[in-house]
Length: 223
Ligand code: NI
Ligand code: MN
Image 1 (tube, protein in one colour):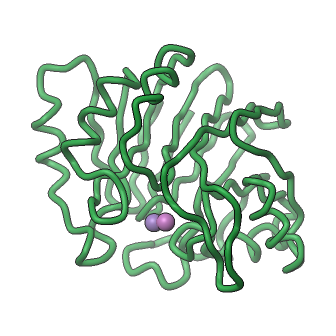
Image 2 (image 1 turned 30 degrees about the vertical axis):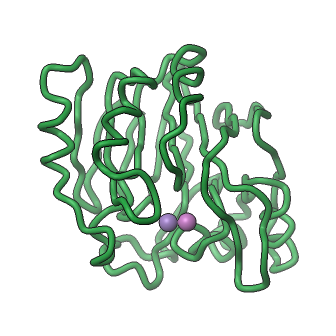
Image 3 (image 1 turned 30 degrees about the horizontal axis):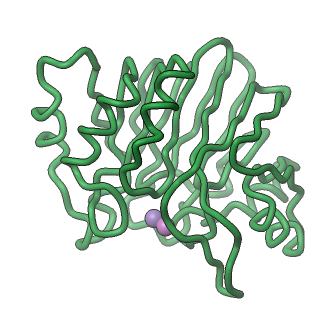
């Protein structure tokens, strides 16, 4: 499985012939190198309705005939805009042709320009036997220990930006609970208010049984 960081909280995940994108904030993202028109995926996963996550989801869904996979209320918003969708909700999992997706809690908000869009979520994505946990936007929560106990997480994608989400200290605590083999920081340095040094996160995990991988936008890692 290959993960490619597209900046902010956007990742593309490819395994064999299958490709998906999570939180496709590309247009207007000051650090993104990928253009929405270049995206070729079979599903668009969206953690919540904020513009820095929903991003180009509707356009990518239409162009690729790929469903938006998100909490029910947010999928409704996207399908009204012309996207196709597969609504899910927290605690629910589903087997798709590309792999399995399960929604986790995330402590955050979820709105679009027309108002509330249900609850935000995180995703557990399993493709070809490898599991990635994308935390979405969230503060630290102790149920991360349960997520870590009940899933063998090969790679955790965790926000470190502070202000809107966990900062570095809490993200280090999250790693302790999730026990992933690999962790990639996200949701930092896109804007001044979430400026962080990811090396501080890496140093904070020195000596712990986890590989910290810092990716630049456009950069990839094998999981
Ligand atoms: Ni948000
Ligand atoms: Mn955000």
